[in-house]
Length: 106
Ligand code: FES
Image (cartoon, rainbow, N blue to C red; front, side, top):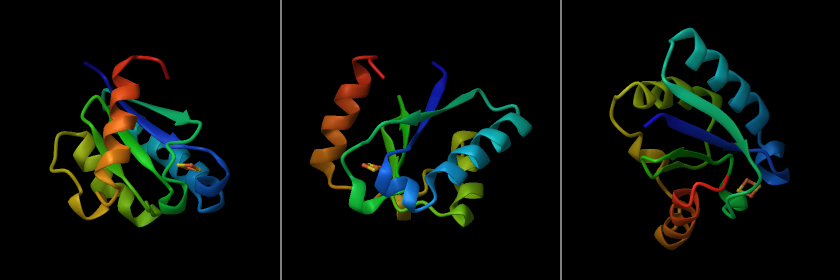
C-alpha cells in the first residue's frame, strides 16, 4: 500500500513552519521517486507539539519536526529506520488518530 505522509497545516503547526516542511517533503519525495503521497491534514490534535507529520498506514507520528529532521524522515519513508527521537506524542492520542486514518476518511 502506498504510504501517505500527512503534514498538519492548521494554525499552530503552520506557525512553526509546517507549510515549508510539507513543500520540502513533497519536493524531496518527488526527487527520490519515492512511492509516497505528501498531503496536508487539518489537525491531529497535538497542536502544542507540532509541526506534526503522520505516516499512514505505518502508524508513525513525528512531532516537533524541523527542517533539519527531513533527511532522516525521508530515509525512513524510503524504508529506513523510524526516527524514534521524534516519536514523542501521547500514545492515547496516537491510537485515536491512527484508528481514524484506518477508516480511510482523510
Ligand atoms: S495545529 Fe497541527 S496538530 Fe493541531
